[in-house]
Image: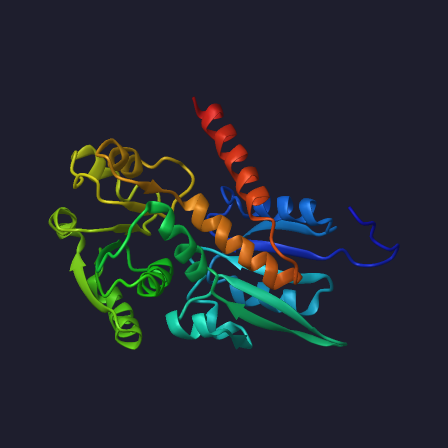
Length: 292
């Protein structure tokens, strides 16, 4: 690792969210720093939507900040708080990465990106799906928006979004209209019915929200699942879907790909993707062993 000149400020980045203690982002980014020789620090900061504006102002003015990753519940709330956004943020109305662009002696400019779209797009082929025209998305938050954009990119043209509050699907319907995907909302009470005809499922819901589907012992045989959760892993839903012959891909794959793109945006270097994935796998394995 290269040494930092005496008296200089160490470059730093962080992941923000609430809750945040479980986040693997520091592990993945530190693995990337180690592999590329960067003397950077990456931390996890507890932050909810109420405290986000003040924290971003700190980042603008404090020296050393290079970037931020954002997770729930900040992905949508952060959009109006940054100065510039990329095309994916404009498309889906949510961001998960902020690059701090230094402006000399002036306050830094915050540039918003959405690397979730890339992360999900890169993870979908790992399920082995080919020529699928429809998909079922569980949940209607910021990650669901990225999922719909990613599904459009692999040729899906019809998506049913199951949500506890069906009104939250309205922005996803409008997103679908912009990108040529027919998006339809369905109440959470209909999830079993929707699963019965699904070709491919992406779960974007919080931990525990889909456990009842596993206890109900209902999953269409062989229907692929991409579950964006990675801790705890496997989720009850992922475990049961796999027992029904389903190809299952977990959130570590999504997180690794989106973190790799975030690393590249923040540093300008090529991301060591497999080093990052391996570091994440090792930590998750340690957590599982500690829990048993």
